[in-house]
Image 1 (spheres, protein in one colour):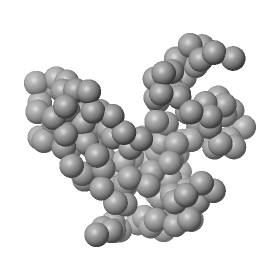
Image 2 (tube, rainbow, N blue to C red):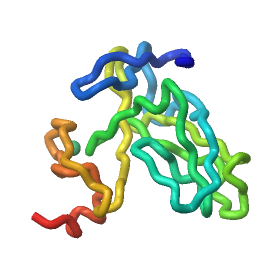
Image 3 (spheres, helix red, strand yellow):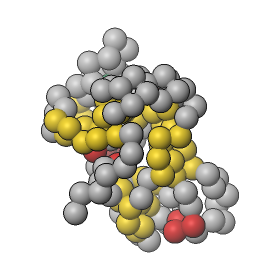
Image 4 (cartoon, rainbow, N blue to C red):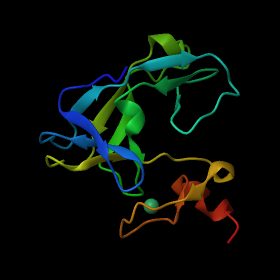
Length: 143
Ligand SMILES: [Zn+2]
């Protein structure tokens, strides 16, 4: 069942679906708390999963799983608990605007994937790295 959240909506994007703002968000403003399924498996991986500290990750539910990558994103995921001892199910991850966001803008984050998981990037930003990869791992990608 698709869940919704005030201020955002899922719409068709350039590739598949994306998450869009339906209102204005100021830089630094929290857009919402990410909900999802906690997975206790250090080897688990998927296109959307979020690191939740040692041994845990979260598979975000709708609408958050539609957050697309951009090399110059307008949002970031922010953990309210950075303590390694905090179990994954007790952590709170929020989506926060890192630029001023206008209504109808697509909300994006930097996936910061490792070089081994990188795929070509189509974000179209002026400073696109060409790959969906963490900036500090870009040099590890074979040309
Ligand atoms: Zn890009």
